[in-house]
Image 1 (cartoon, rainbow, N blue to C red):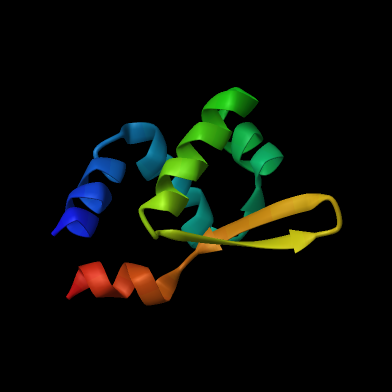
Image 2 (image 1 turned 45 degrees about the horizontal axis):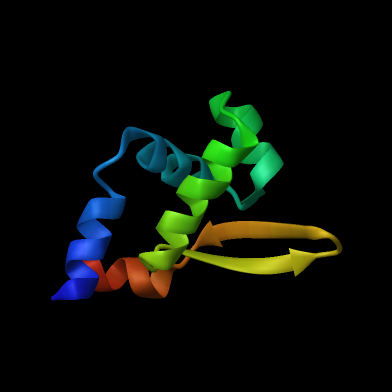
Length: 80
């Protein structure tokens, strides 16, 4: 039940929904999220962290960059 509450809280913010919308189109690093939404680095990072903590995102390293993408396995769990 606590995971569901965390997921609902993560989706209750407009910025996080906008970030998910960007990541539904393509994977992106923090700087690309910043540019797409015209937000600060700290705001992008904080909201990406909340979405990742709720299980909506996964990450991979690409050199020095951390690239975020939608974790479909977890996201589908909430869709059913």
